[in-house]
Image (cartoon, rainbow, N blue to C red; front, side, top):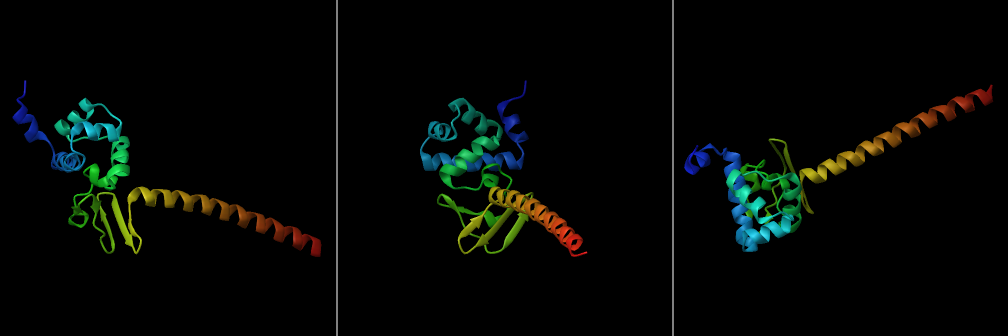
Length: 150
C-alpha cells in the first residue's frame, strides 16, 4: 500500500495547480463546506478534489458562476502567465491567447472565455444553416422567375 506522501508526489502539476486554486476559493468563501454548498456536492466530494486535484466540469461551472473564475482556470487547464488571478476575478489580458485549448479574448467589455466562444460558435453554425437555406430558396426563386420569363 502506498503512503500518502508517495500519492502526493504522483499528482501532476495540473492537479497540484487545481488544488492551489481550490485553496484560493476556500480562502474566499471561508470553508470547504461552503465550497461544497456552492458546487452542490457533498463535503466528501470536495475533500476528494483536494486529494486528487480533479473537479468535474459541472462543479467547475457552478464555481465559475459563484466566483467568476474561468472554468479552464478552475480545471487547471489554464496555466499561462496571462491568467493571473487577483481578488476574485481574472485580470483582463489584452489580445488573444491559446494555451492547451484555452482561449481568452479581451474586448472593451471584459474577458470572453471559452464557454462564451463555444456558444457563439453554435450560434454562428445556426446562422450559417439559415443562410444556406435562404440561398437555396433564392436559387429556386431565380429558376422559377427564369422559367416564367420564357
